Image (tube, rainbow over all chains, first blue to last red; front, side, top):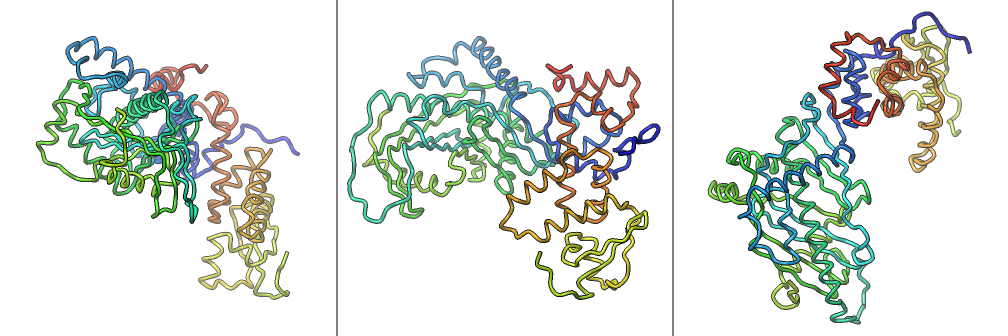
Length: 336
Length: 161
């Protein structure tokens, strides 16, 4: 190998801008992109044109912390809001971050990256924790407008076998397990709320954004993916919210809840059987802006966000939800 | 490999910037969109195609990549992936940037992607001073400007020298 020349050439000056940009798009990680601003003027002039970005969990720790700081602040400052509406174990829902109309001060990362079209966020959620012996599958549905959450989880999910007869253990679930599942549901709701706050803080900031996905860096089970029409619907919903949102952050108040348990749920359409299925739903409103939103009469299904850990079995999840809604009256015993 | 019977139409000759000629099978050359377009528009394949921006060393690497990808069946994705990572391993930055330029010029998307990814991975996890050194980027900020840019992105430097 011959040792090379004099003053060596800046490698990046050899490349056309769009190739350098291609490299930055591959770099993707927002922390590194922002650090690269400091490298040189060429870097800092090209980085703002990056279109694909990923956020790693590390920064979001501070975001999630800032949620909780602000929650505490909120509680201190509005004693009257806390209390009577909350029942155990759902009482911990009072710790929810304020729903969409939030005045949380997110670190304004990448305020100069206005061209971002695609964002992937990895969050340090610890959704499943030490309970994964109980819980195999879950999904949740969230509606910006109504703040309705539906959480479904099942001990097992398997392909349907042709002639399966035994209707095993008809009430094979213990009271304390139900309690723990309800508590889990509450945690999911809280985390889902965090996701919505995050979406709300990101989507309006990046006008070119077309796609956003949020994954759980720990176990890859939580996945929220918005793109295409769904994304547009979401942006519209948020625009309406922000138009009418008041300056004050508002707590979320729950006014309806329910749920139940089914030992076996058959899903003929997708050919699956779910066992040990528990569902929980919670509905609430977040004060003024919700009521105003209702008054504007925007009433579209597009405003539904789906948070779904059945990433690959999306059809299964929706079929289960439909069945459960249909059967709620008779089969499911309310445990809430 | 299973090249078909010797046939003039199945091969073409590429000429590097430093004058070396490479005889290439057509299906290998087709990995390059540039060459594919030239062949489609019927630039006679009997001619020598000059590639004035690409030196012999780089062109040899590029053609090695193309050959591997042209010959491997799509079912062997795993094998190709390990070939790709081996291919760029220990490559010096000069060669890597030559490769990026060549892949960009010849429009070989797969190669451009892996080489760009490799450069991105090199940038990652390194202090900006080191990034400058590795790529011979001169710092064109004044100390005041640099401090200001750093301040603007302060959150990104938390816990970082």
